Structures are given as structure tokens and as C-alpha cells.
Image (spheres, rainbow, N blue to C red):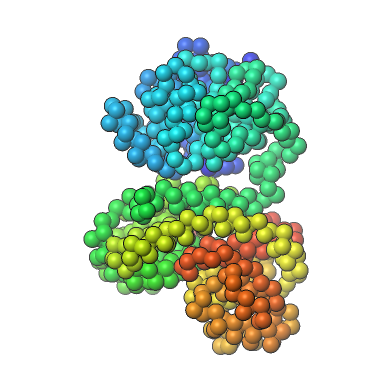
Length: 608
Ligand code: AGP
């Protein structure tokens, strides 16, 4: 996600901003920019690519004199990486400059409202809407303009703002996206994360939701969304810089697991409007959706496992046939594609060579293609006919967690969209599905709270040689992802197996104490899988079961049970995968493996 820095004090602002942004580079970005007030006007300089491009452009800030400013590293969500879309964004009169981290979910509605009031936009971003909205409400009092804008904006935002007519202040606003204030000796700072300010101060204030901070070079004052002054206590940061980059988490993977509730919200909420699924980027009217006779889902690794889940969800809800292929297989098997097929390529990085090649193969045959991609402006995002972004923010750990969860959400939304267009679900059923989807963030949060119990269980298996994951239907897809998570970060051999297949071979591998994780979330298959668990237990396996709250029957067969909250049967992957992610993480940590950068693996496999 984006990085924000702001400064006001005795020193020149630009070098402080560039230095602070450099401490946030780990967050991932594709462009950067700074705005500095030079005593007469607000100057903005932006550059796509690495931060050093901006530093060179401004001679390390020397060409932008002034003691108050804001800066930003942008991870593109709305609008491809470009100078125009980079932050800071001005209002038309260039008297207000804004930087933003998060997603303004109702930005299209606000943009329409502002265009009707005569505002002209130059970028595709949701952030530019904020600049014009502030302009709309500014009558001389920045705080009044900010609180009015906050009452109109929906979604997540951390904002840094400067007003030309109030150059003795920097404003920070927070809703969901993190924002901190640093109280320094030679001035005060704002930042989206602690590392940006540690060089200047360890005394920070954490802005809470719907709070505003007003910084002058000597003081920091806080207000609530109603404009009432509030008092806050500072925190002294005792982290080292490296730990701070992970937001206090030991590893990026753990941090990203804990970002999943927000990631699910960011991917889900902008696409549910007035109880309807709205996926503008799909570029298909209901009639075109009804004309799709077959869907081919093509991906690699975890994205493939998300695709296997999608098969069950699409076929279950929309009754459209779905084939799922590993991209490395699809591109060489001379696939049979019909003109009214739809090929969906799922990819976090948008640069996986096999997935990109599969996309090109499908396009060469004239079939419509849709990318479900996390990195905005990546090759797959650019080359697919349509792209649906997962808005998970940059994922640093090689083992995907939050991007995988966001891929599931994108698929659920697409399947419901297809089901409604094909009238295979009623409006009431669709409304119930959407209600279940909107409960997922809180349920994921609750499961993440289980980490101590899972860590304790994981420590018993750091010496394991083989671990099997079994399930039926969607539970088999969940098992695939659980198995990959374990093997890729702990180097323990693991296999996922359809529970019904065990007796056709694999069960011969079960010895006394072999750990088998049985995923049992599909109610109509409970009994079948429980009988598999009994078979496993009678051969000495230790069975960990992940099942729905209330399925007490399983305690007679399994040795250790983890319950997940009730949700629609099509959405259980989003919940069951959480304890399996945590289990893999703690086994890897217990073994002393390099959790974020496992041996032999890359975050994006851009070669065959
Ligand atoms: C998952 O934890 C792995 N990092 C890997 O399997 C990954 O999912 C696969 O390489 C696909 O990457 P993509 O989503 O960027 O295309």
C-alpha cells in the first residue's frame, strides 16, 4: 500500500520527505511525489519508477525550497502507474495538495457530483476526488473543509494535506488506513508508518479512526470528525528500524496475514452497492454474461488453488461449466476453446510467465480474457481484455496470504454476478450471500485471534517429515493451499489429497503419528469425510480437523479440532485457510526457516 510522509519545522522539508519515503519503500510502490510550500505557492514534483528518480529530479530536494510539505509513494489501485496519477494531487487552483493511502469506495459517485459542480479531473485516481472535495468545502477554515469531506467519503483513507493559505500547518486524517504523527525536536511529522520518522523522533502519536491531526512546527493538536479538540498520549517507539518496517510484526507474512480483514474489505466493499454486485471493470452486460458457455480458469500455485475453489462456486451458484488449468499445462495442451468461452487468469504479481503465456494463447484464439490481478499496470493486467483488481496492496512475503484471500473474494463476487445475470439465484439468495460475504472480515479477525493456540499445536510438528491435507469438494481445494503453505515455508514434505482417494494409494503412507489435516466444512460431506478420518486414525494418523462451529460429531474421530464460524458453504475457504496459514507460519518459525524468503522461491516467477 502507499507511503505517506509530511513535515513542518525549521529544516528544509524536501530532503526530510525524500528520506522518510525511502524508509517506506518496502511497502511497494510504482511512483512517488512531493509537494512543498516555498513561501508563495505549493510546488509539486512527481516521478514514476523508483524513488531515486524523484531524488535525482529534485537534486535530493534542493530544487524545492520550503519548510512545510507532504510526500507519497504510490501503489496503484485506481489508475495505472503514471505521473498524472501519482500523488500529491492538487485542487484546480493549486491551493490545496493531498496525498492518500487507502480506497475511497464511493469515489465515482463523488466524482460525478463534483463534475456536475464544474470540477475538471486530470487523473483516474480516487485521490483527486479528495482534493476537489476539500476545495468544494474550503471557505477559509481547513478543519471545517476536512470534517465536511470526511462526512462524504466512504472507504479507507489516510490523508496528508497542506493548504496554501495556511502554510504554517500540515493536516493528517485517518480512517482505517494507518497514520502516525512524530513529535520531533526540529519540527513535526506525519507518516503512514513508523520507519519514516524514526530518524527524527521516537515519540509518536497513533491517530485513530476518524481523527484529525493539525501540526505546526511547535505543536500538534488533535480533533475528532465533529471538529472537537481531543487529547492523545504519545507512545515511545522502542523498535529497531527493521522491525518497524514490519509494523512491529516479526515477519511480513504475519503482518500480511493480519492485513487480511482489511484486504477483504477493500476488495469487497467497493463492489457491493445498494445490495447489488457492481463490477464495472468486468465490461460485460448481463446479456454477454449469459452468453458465456464455459469458463476456463488458468493460474499457478496458490492462484491455481483459488481457481479450483472458483470452479465449485461458479458451478454451484451460476451453473456455468468451469475448467481449471495449471498455466504451465494449459499453454501446451492445445486447449479446446470456443468463441463464447471466457478465460480468467488469476495472478497476484501479474507477471508469472506461464500465466502470461496462457493469457496470450487464449487471446490469440480470439477468446475473451479477464485478469484477476493484484499489481496494477502489470503485464497480465495490461494485456487481458478486462482486469478485476484484488486491491490487497503490495505483498512482500513470498508465501501469499492476503492476495490469495482477495482472489477468493473477487471470485465470489464474479460468481454471484454471473448467478444473478443467469437468474440461477433469487434476489433473496443473492442478498443472503452478500450478507455472509460482509461478515468475513470480522470472522477472519476472530480466527487470527487464535494464533497462540495454533502456535502451541504447530510447535509439536516442527520435526514432522510428512504432513497430509485431505478434503472433499471445496475442502480439497482448501487442502491444496494448506499443503502448499506448509511445504513452501517449512520445507516439510506435504501433499493434499481428495479424501475419497486415500484408499487408492496414499493411505499406505500413514504411519503411527503421521499428521493429517482434514478440512471438513461442506456439511453434505461431513459423514463421508469423518469416515475417512476414522480410517486414518485406525492406521495411527494424528488427525487435525478444521470444521464448522457446531459440527461436534467430528470430536469422536479427530484428535484435535479447530472450529471456524458459520458462513455460506461456498465461502468456507476464506475462513478455513486462516488456521492453516498460521499453522504453516509457526512451523516455519519453529524450524528457524526464512519465512518471508523461503529457499529456491521467488515472489514472482517471471521465467518458465
Ligand atoms: C504461493 O504462496 C506462492 N508464492 C506461489 O505458488 C504463487 O502463488 C504462484 O507463483 C503464482 O504467483 P502469481 O499469483 O503472482 O501469478
